[in-house]
Image (cartoon, rainbow, N blue to C red; front, top):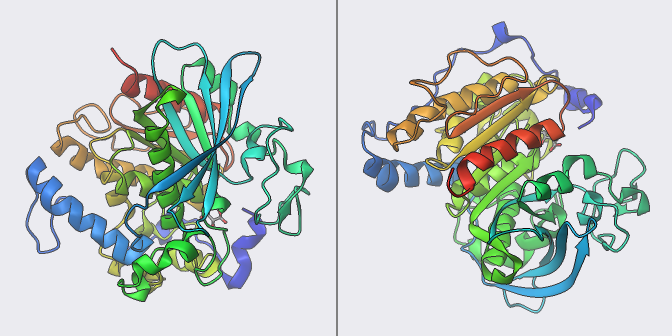
Length: 421
Ligand code: GTR
């Protein structure tokens, strides 16, 4: 994100808490018809499906039903001085000749007693941007123009090798006993507004023809759909040594929004991690601070469904808010992370959303954010809240994924995805 973008189209973000409009959050534990939800069964059979449908209709759009995947092995190699096996697999969406394909790159620690838990996340700059090994093919697809000379036009160049390696501390993760799988998000749907023709919007789009046009899947929903097909692949590839019942879906920024939607729509994900996801992710839309619904729809008209534009400068009219997206992961562990210098993403709104999801987690028999009730106040930086199944931290620094963030995710995963803990 370029700070200069903040003023494009005349938008001046508000960062003043005192100028936040008065708002009331929709209650996740009251149905649209006004009935209180007081049992886990009512949540699971009535309110959860209702909320999912509302998010589809009003925010992310309706995706096609899962398509069968085809898998083609590309390579397998021992890397990092014997620490791990890296496998590349092309995953094709459906059986059509022109099926879209995405390349999943998977690292599995060699030293392991049995199948290991894994993190699955999309990346921004290609698999070759995650690690600079020249044997990883330079992704030939469409790329956003890089800030630092990593693209020529919309093509990745050699400078993009390892460009996002700091966000993917592979060896640290592998040494902790976890596998990592990643996919370039542009393989699934290139990140520009093309009228929903390229990527899986084009090849699978006829399957949402029955849906009202304003509620058809946007790009975030398409990327989330790709994550689910990635999980299909991990389930099928039993020889990799990954326990597909213990896969955490994670993402940063727009891909954090995507991870949250993937976790909401696909209950097979054992854990959900949102890193600096902001507006349309973990941050409450009704606070209208930093990036707003109106700004995001104007700048990225392809991310959400068209219906979401109804809530530009009109957040109160939306029947859902983002705490309910977090609640859709319940009772599975979820972790929301913010950064102090990322006010655009509204750290406080991310914290408040996690806290407002807590009652759903407690209704489902977990301890939510831990203790008897969620903390009333946002924690200081580097004071993670991680004793319950809803984790949160504020990190000092910029909009990024750092080793500090990963250390918290690994500790949280140790608690919830490792046997005997
Ligand atoms: C920004 C956008 C944010 C966030 C970010 C990113 O331009 O306003 O919502 O998604 O991009 O994905 O890097």
